Image 1 (spheres, rainbow over the protein chains, first blue to last red):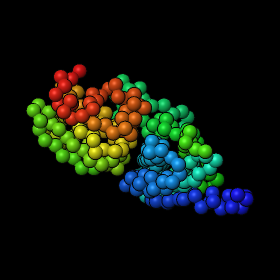
Image 2 (tube, rainbow over the protein chains, first blue to last red):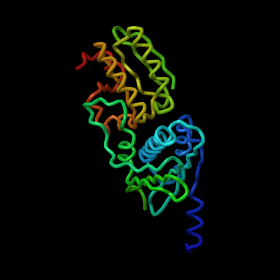
Image 3 (cartoon, each protein chain N blue to C red):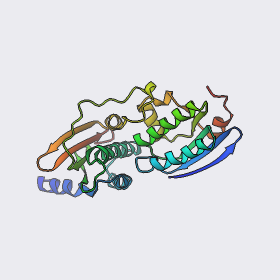
Image 4 (cartoon, rainbow over the protein chains, first blue to last red):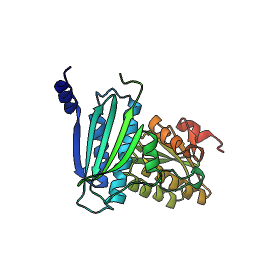
Length: 148
Length: 112
């Protein structure tokens, strides 16, 4: 495959979705994601893991980034790169980079605080970045033994 | 998310269907609060038809667990699907809940 063909093939495999930053959209994002992950050589477990991670990140954006106010969008991009699936989540909420990600101790029976730790635990990489002029960019990378 | 409940001896069996997530958990909390207000403090939740749970759904169940304990009641979770069980294990909350492989065992077990 020549380089131009490869670039075309990669571009063809990338898909995106933009929705209003509202909690009611989160299940729709998850269902769209599962379709977008079909035919990407992922196991059912991998798809489930990414669905969980994307759910947590998007819920976090709506609740803590946009704080329930209307007007902000969330864009989800899915692409396959070098044997891994990348899910990129873009938002225009105030800059967000967590200092550390740690779930509450189970004996505390905390009624929250698990989201980012769960997201981190089910992907191979999670990156919190600021996209110039585009707000926050969260990149989730999932790769596994099943890739060639 | 659909919820249906019926009495089974001293327990109330609650069958849940659908994703337990950030969108559905507020409604679920309301339904479960109503059961507690009706004096039904010993609950078995059948999660066979719950294919997905997120941290919001998990938090709703933690809240419920604390509520039943405060009322000297009990909460048993039955038939967790693999993605749901995984969330309990990743957060290490599996040790805090009474988890059962099926509803029949949840109903007949003497408990902890």
